Image (cartoon, one colour):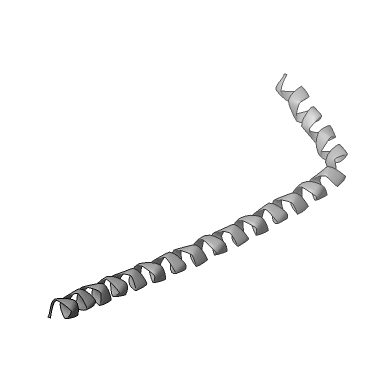
Length: 71
């Protein structure tokens, strides 16, 4: 009888562990998606900055003009 009770207790503990493992798996997938989105955002920002860099001289002249007007 004692063996059956221990086995039942272990089965319940394994069920709880399985539930926690599913939660951890779901959270891990969620974090993975956040990382993918973060990398995509960085790539978009890099592309934008490269475009600005290529046109940087035009922006630089405009910025100088604005700064001179403020003085």
